[in-house]
Image (cartoon, rainbow, N blue to C red; front, side):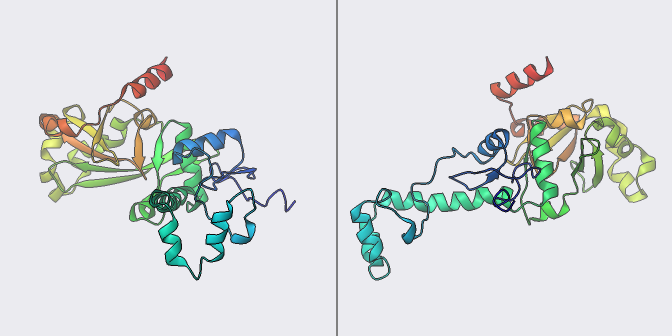
Length: 276
């Protein structure tokens, strides 16, 4: 039993015992599906690093040349000489490989089971969810996956452009439409006296008089359709932790024309295929 569980649980889906360990980034997976997911999410080719660390006693004659053996035997005493002999480009590759490994494996290995399942289920829905362990956004993220009903419930932040009015809704079911979620925000009864004055233009414009822009991790915005469900709105999009949506009066739409994210042809082809 111990030999079967020596790798622990799959670091992608967190459901089954891991069977494989990636030779490049050392992420543990349980199936070919999870292997492919980890390769796509971490941009990993599955090939072992040429400069990957290995203890001296584990090296064999087939793994290193006689010249490398000599350098390693005198490593402690001749550190400066070794740096003169090592190819400059190879050293750069080593430094970049270590940084890449730490950054990418942190995304999966440091996630709690709750966020690991959320991230996996989002991927299954064609949503690229980025989660930053131990960050402020991560601490505020109340989104979760309910396995009993197989649904994601999101935290969503709503900010009204040109004001300091911001609302947060928790446990938003993925099947709910955007206009149903924010309907109350466009009524005077919902706000206190101070907020009513700030929101007067939005209340007058109504839902049809605004546009919904979801923030991307790249400084731009996706434009959403208020008639769509959260699930449909998030498909084929990249989200950092949870959706942050900016509500803008339609008359100010041109202000964001240069900040709108343009969907590429691959996205459109995938979307049209799914719709049909």
